[in-house]
Length: 289
Length: 305
Image (cartoon, rainbow over all chains, first blue to last red; front, side, top):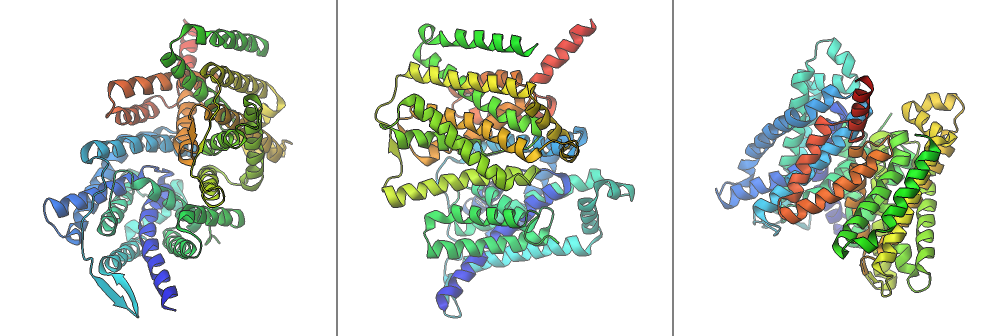
């Protein structure tokens, strides 16, 4: 009983992080058809910023979280202006935007990852934060994992609330449904696109900051999260933030249970297995109507 | 250029390249080999993806499967036969995959082809570990490096010849129709499913054969090396930077890319991937039609002068 509980909770913790990464990526794809393959690299940057903040400036990582989010937001707006703006405004068709932004994403991936290697080296870095055990219903977890889970879920829910209840959220949803229609009713694409792209990177940064509290970090840590995020958004449906949240939890739980009952080396086989099964049965995602 | 002329040029070029082992040093020959490999991969990739606008990231999977056929058959199969077998296994796998997932388009197709590659890689890793008790395999009797060069040259030339033939055939026409509007093509009587499966398997055949041919270059084979997703990414980059709708574009860009990568690697061992990333971004932003669009512009200007 307590084993099942423990597995479920640690699956949900992993899933919470997946959800934050995936929602950021999904916003960028849903709104602008930018399949940003370098998303994980910005997660890595967020993790390194938090690590620097803790080890050099001795700032509590949780306090540092908004700083990281803001820094990545600004970086996102800059990246959008410098790279993706030109693609979105010159490409003749949606497929062309997808293909070109994928290529630019690869370029950014090489660029950011190798700059990180040059700056910080290939060593694993880490720090210990809130590593004391906590007992919940007879099962033991590290306090930092529970805190990370709380923040991940809070960030996802806050974003969902913004999308659902505010005017800007309404504008974003309108643009996801119909870019042309949204422009016709007076939604300003020129402002909304960079802001949403920046928000996507800010979420990646937050996920990275949270991850740095529980795992060791390295310049190559981002890539697997990009792949997982792609799986999650396909599971939950492209353009659906709630789908990404649920898809993230689902994948986290499936992975944790699967790894426990088969073997840890099958982790990727399991997540791709889930992905392929879902795509074959429901090509538009699990929660598509 | 007519098809016949194109084949003539290809044959002459192939024969000229076949002389290289007597002219070049070992280092330059290795460089030529990597140019040829990427030219073959990029041309075979754009054979399907360039015409149909489907973005496949499965090249690494086909390449790795081919390499593993060589590794498993080492000692039992002669080199030439294992290259053929590698191609056939990859083509068979591609046809199977294609039949299952070709109803997906765009980003979904890209993600699932990438996922399939990873799935194959992790399954092989698991199988080898659990049932064979190894992580990698050693290929003990490797053929001479000139034999490998000629084999890769042969496969790449065959890939270009096939791409030329497909382009001139009804199949090529059907694929381009699918690329511009799949539903309209179907309405006009194109059997989209059959055309896509056939073309995807054909393009996978060459990727698999190249993997099988190149496998003997690394004496030690393990899944992370041969299923390296960067082989697949690099192929897509080369084909798209060259201009995936053309055949000459990917060839030129494979040579440029391989030489550039090698040059940057030697000159700036630490900064080279940073520079490569920056170049890639600039290329996509300021030359979105690929290298091939330069030829078109040049020809257009000459025609108007």
